Amino acid sequence: MKYFFFLTAFFFISFCVHAQENSPFTTGFEETISSGILGQNRKIWIHIPNSNGGNKIKDRGHYPVIYVLDGNSNFNTVVSITEHMSESSLCPPMIVVGILHANRLSELTIGTDKELPGVVGNGEKFMSFVEKELIPYIDKTYPTTTYKTFIGHSIGGLTVMNTFLHNPKLFNSYVSLDGSLWWDNQKIVKEAKAILPTQNYKGKALFMAMANRLERGVDTSSVLKDTTGSTELIRSNLAFISELSKNKKSQIHFKSKFYENDNHPSVRLAGEYDALRFIFDFYKLKIYDSELQNPDFKLDSLLVTHYKNVSEKMGYVNMPDESLVNNLGYQMMGNSQFKKAENMFKLNIVNNPGSGNCYDSLGDLYLKTGDKIKAIASFKKALTLKEIPETKEKLANLLNEKKK
Image (cartoon, helix red, strand yellow):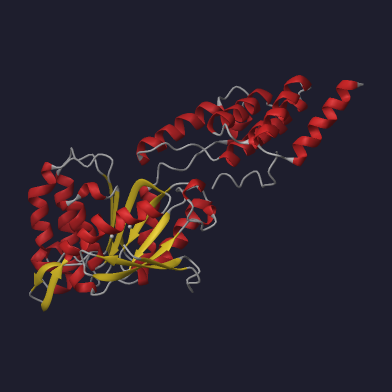
């Protein structure tokens, strides 16, 4: 069955749970979770991909999960970015979990800092909740895959970096947005000097964003000579990056970026987008017009190779979307590249053996090329899988012709 489309479009946590289905948030919904570790109920915001209809049912798809600290500030932007990127085929559709905080400073820090003597960090306890209660609940309740991303801004970034350093296996990718690595006299930077050289981060991704709070005439090199408190945030980030760069065998997928035109609040949006573009830089399928036009180019091999690489990066099997392959098949058929079209439709059947539409499309190809016997067989197979009126009509016409 041919989809109606623009041909260029395809190139883009015992718990008590209370779900508020009529939540005012247009980007998701709210749940209340009972935590034994924290000894209190905690609210989280959850977004299910629009491509899944916002549906929680597990048999409709499985998705990577992004865990976002300071959900009240960062949830909506991350949801918007992931929806835009997935619609543009720049990343897979993803579930987003926004974590709301009862005591932000306490939950996102560890120990104390001389500048905030009244604050005692309980970050280890909070992250124990995330690891042992929140993530297992999300995996049990929602259609998740094993790939997880952790995003935090400011002291949330500090939590992200502490997790990256001390529990790197918890997430696949980490995003620190102007992280407060100055906390406790740059304790995390000092720990990094000892820990980073001993680690191998193969398969892990890290993105660090830094906002511009420098005086006129000061850059990211000259600021290292400064000793004032006003530059300690960026200096601590630069020091961590320096330590990370010394381990040439870490195999980490890493990028840092200085946002010259953004301050501490505004760096969140730009940094979230750039981070996700960087983390999923392997995801986009690139097909050149010359390859589409070349009848000898093995389009099916390109798709198989690309999604094998995506699967290796994501840690679970990824296959091309059924509609994408279907659309390619019809495009090739429209260009009279019938062998390439047949390969596309057959690849779709291999990947989606229970789809009546895939067999219907193959039948359309055989009908186009005049192979009525194979067309009849394909349409019959399609109807055993799904009652498709259009298919039924095409089959009836062919059978009537055969009687004449």
